[in-house]
Image (cartoon, rainbow, N blue to C red; front, side, top):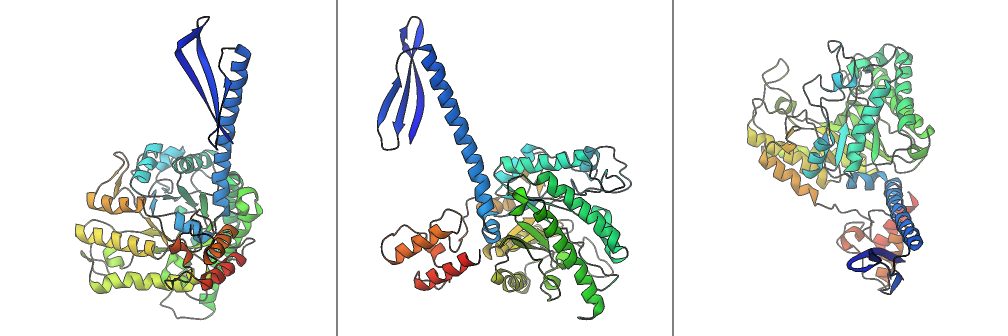
Length: 478
């Protein structure tokens, strides 16, 4: 391999031209002078060669990055997603009162500014690696469920902002005016709309790199008019309600995979029942089947207890809590997340906490900080990706900074964190046969260059043949 550079020496001139020297240096250290005198044809030829090499290297880097995303399992992807932030109250803004004529009219209707590259740059600088982009696709939609072309372009533009910063982007169907309720009363028509939306999104983004993740829906996957958690733990009504969501999630996977290209291997985020931990861990909830192994992620939201995170004043269903942080409250976060770990992570299905957070009105500021930092750290330490819900409460989009300096400091710590990726023995961010070979060589004392934390796959504190056997199982299941 040779590395090329061009040197112009202004002190040496021949016939009023600068002396031009092009060097080629091999990776073994040898150097060769390709050209040392100003021959016009040689200059053109060599400069063309250099430009070709530069362009080729750029394209190789682009395709290598895309290939890396394609090769990652869902577990590897979630570990790489770090912590996330929701672009809240923006592209999912909707309402009949808006009467908007453009995408911008809707994007700014709930009080936020137009999203720019600078907004996303600030989020990246703050320590986040993932942006969830909620979308109301019904805005400006035609009667036959055709998505407005400008909306598709705008969503892609925001996704591009994330890609430019080397971040993951999640695109979903959000509340979108509440039409998911119609699955309970007019299932066929609701499924027709759902199918149309995801068919169009999948087609539009099918060639997009796999740092883009699709999410089947938001938290509207529950139908209390059919069954709710207070109406019994079993029965036909419960089964019917759960099967609606199970069918929606299966249709989602089938549509995306059928569109081909990058969508054939894209990681997909599956919404749990009401994105509630207990309801999602219920045996009635079923993960969809897929045509490719290890590419599905489960999504839940976390706003426990709602009397602290949601209520700003007393309501008929609860008394507003102004503080949070007792030992029991902190322990409950870990207890709740352990349910997801035991139900899903233990089966190779990683977890994204698609929303968490709290209002700040009538709340003790220290309690707000403690709640957000506790949920974020607990989820992160369990290998989940926690994604903060923010409608501009915590992040100033005009100033591109986290408003609370203490929260800013907490989030920034995650910027440099590298989570243990069990099985990634050679630390190249992908678990594959190269890791197996390197671990085997390590155990044979042929190679000492391994990441011992990642190599301790069974987490017993020792790197041994049991870890090699466990890694073999992991690879066979990929």
